[in-house]
Length: 120
Image (cartoon, rainbow, N blue to C red):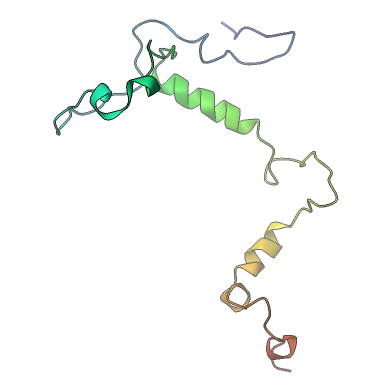
């Protein structure tokens, strides 16, 4: 069974569309400290009047959902960065790695050039 599409695109189902009453995405150990009602710790004006409408899904559904969302992010490791701004230059990984060398990373920005050029 394929996921429904939205507005003619090949989008995956929303996490709320995967929701089914009774599914639980977590299991916590029993509380080992005394429980205190939230109303005793937080002013009533800041407390929610009704429970949040959260999706009821299994843990694997949550993991797959957020993993899929993360794949949609642009990054230098998985594709071209689309902004094209002249102020946002791409630095190759080799430059980033080299800049982390102790000899570079520990240099003070105002260090005189003649003291950091190395020996001939």
